[in-house]
Image (cartoon, rainbow, N blue to C red):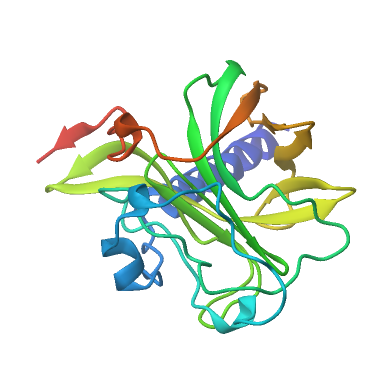
Length: 228
């Protein structure tokens, strides 16, 4: 029995070590976001003027995948799906636009939601999460969480993330790795967007037309322990 317990503890320890390596030390995902999109100024746009999804332009699958550069962008970028006009699927709701938390767990949080066809891109707090058909990568988001736990020899280390965004009865559900537990939900309630996050918080968000000045440059996040 004692040997069995030691074996189980060893397996658990190895599993935890593998998760730490995967989350903070494994190779970072390659940057696939178009350079012009990252360099451009997404704060200069009117987000109450949304693209018409009439199928006259590019499809979601024709546009390169977007993801977070390093542990976060240095200014609010241009939209990933600006040239896309593919209509939304029947199971999807239209939650496109710029949103700000006004009550609940994350008051002041600002995010941009893009949609085109079966593709959804959420940009907020230095992060770009892009799910759906594209011309350069897989379906799931493949980037980082953005919160820097530590720096090693001057290099920032933040946790890798991967998730799917699946529409189910007009609710956008995020599933870890595409097959794991549901951790985030987004859905409309009248004119507001509801955001249920993994920390069990529920945030009600209002629509904005322009990006607030304080959100043009993301705030550094994380403990940022320094080693060497």
